[in-house]
Amino acid sequence: MKKFLACCEASKKILNIAHMSANLPVNILIIGQKGVGKTLLAQQISPETPILDAKQLENSIINSTANIKQYDELVITNLEAVLNKKEFFQNLIGIKIIATSKYMPSEIATQFAIKIDVPPLSERKEDLDELISLYLKQAKEIYDIDISIKDIDIDLSSNGVSLKKSIYKNTMLKSLNDEDMQESLEYFLLQKLKNNKDYKELLKIFEVPLLKAAKVQYKSQLQMATNLKINRITLRKKLDQYFGTN
Amino acid sequence: MENIYEQLIEYDLNPYFLFHSNGKIKSYNKEAEFLLNFVGVKELFDLAVSNATQDFGFSQKYISLKYNKQSYYAIVVGYINEEEIALRLYKVVSNKMNTINNNKLKMVNIFSLIDLSKTSTLLNSNLKIDELYDVSIPELKININDFLLCLNDCFNLFVDDKKITLQVHIKIGEYEIINNTKYKIVAIEFKTNRDIKIDNSLDEKAANANINIFTNKNKLRLELPIIL
Image 1 (cartoon, each protein chain N blue to C red):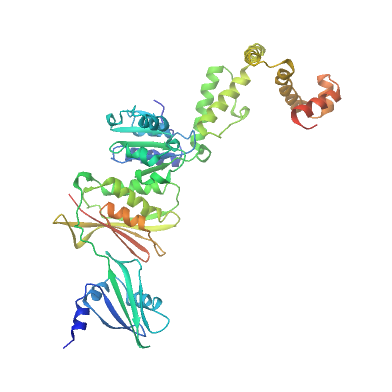
Image 2: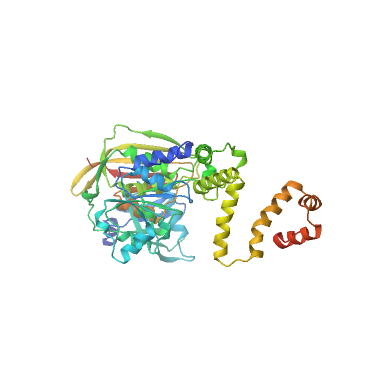
């Protein structure tokens, strides 16, 4: 089982709260942005407890397809998605709830004696470093490439989720050879052709990255035109067409 | 001998005060004498003056007041000359028995709950707490959920403070009677360097948790029975 990472001081405190509250007969709410580790923390509090999505559970309750009474304890994720939260909780009386939410649902705040606010990864430097190191190691093993963190554009917009995606994506892109690229493009173009895209529309897929790369490599339009061996007027037209500027 | 009106006032269930214009008390009844254990003369005099009519006469005002455990819902202020002013407070009375639902109680270490509430509520706060705990307090039966909800709100009052003192001790010589049984009392007292104001929601949460809650300027005190 994956564990909630606790290298920084705030995370250690959070883990301590989780351990302290694990055996208490109270509901626990874990609040935080996407990808901060809310569900992992909930699992850490109660590893054997079933995990249900709040919206799906609400629908099951409305449609009377859920046998709620069979549970003593539940982990409920994405609590913010529930439409009628008060009524939702009326149906869960007597069950210990460990819920996760992106924000504090004020109308049911009193349902939770313990509230754990998990900060974003950007505020947990030691955790972030540890995760980067972990994901980078995994990605290097999978793609069999030696790559440094400096070569990767880290994306923390969705914390751990986007971080992992950005590391894997960057590592994969840098591992591609001509054959991989052609194979990848062939698959991609096949999907586009199924959607009746024509030659002109598909040309954009080649030209945009080519022009961007050339701009980085050659800096000026004159250099770009010279090295790409195309007419400067044609180059200007294409830059204007794709980027709205020359 | 005092006349019947004076006797009525003396034995009234509601406190009555008559102040001199300089703020000193000229007379008061038995209930007022009891109230003076918890509130200063100046505060009561200021209450009377600030609610008096512009000209001679009497005014009634429905206001919510709380001194120690007793709440008041209205006052009458009156004066018929420049020398003296009268104040009468009306008690909120309840015939509710002091009871507790034993089914929801669980034996627990109170310091663990205080630590849990403190850590989770003050996760992003820089508040420093001087803790003075009487560690001889035994494990006691508490409604954990309601206790934590109340305590969380208490800690929340201090999230922006720099430093508070938190004292937990057994009250000497004081007891609470619940379901006709006498219990010792544990007090959890917060002290800061500013006046503390609490809202009705904290009062409600305290009542749900069988906690008596008191504020006195810079102090907030919770009292709960030691049920073993």
